[in-house]
Image (cartoon, rainbow over all chains, first blue to last red; front, side, top):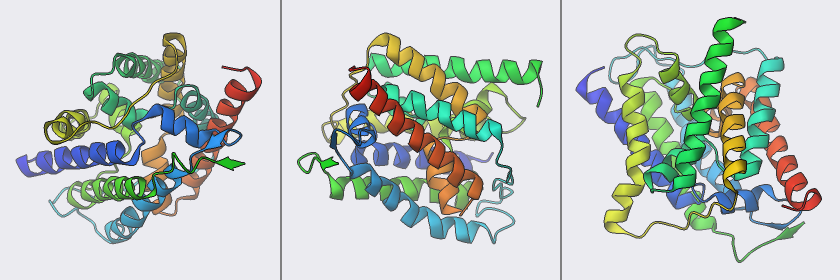
Length: 142
Length: 144
């Protein structure tokens, strides 16, 4: 990693964080209001997704034609195609957890930066879950 | 379905979404890496040589965003209604689930759908459906 790629990674994280804050994604109560179809539904988060994809789509279309990224590192687009039990059960488990607290990984980190104790507890539990995955993978490789 | 128009924030949410897309665009075009937050975090727990520094820098940016925003403006509301027990359970499920499912709202939802990945579309449909079901059961059946 060069100084420049470190800077662009930092910039990307910052802009991502600002986007989460501005959009309302960093407010768990607002996320839950979006997920609560049977309650007083707040459709705002559909626009977050629409806005994000409107910018990311042309960027990924361009990236798909590049062998190396603009700063010279190899272009690492995901190559996995398989739709299997891990993908489905893992994503279902994530969704259940998302619905319990209204927090997904990006907003969790923003909550920590904003000094929210519950955000920190969530991140520690999330890291424990990720470590558990790493241990299970080592014990019973795929 | 009853839409709560008083809570609807179309301009801020669309603008925030554009920023999230811009962040993903910067990381893929400049660095050749996908802005999937669970993958970036998980990669630090299962590290490959030379793939640590950019992850730390990206996460540092996410953590610093509210601190920087506070210098020029007040932070938006961030209400966490869940109790500590729910927070711990939710965190564990999100950590395990995003690693087994190889992505979260950013990696599968934003980046995957932008790449027209069927795998990411299936993952997104699964976590959205489970999120809707989870909230329905907790709020309207269990009465939390």
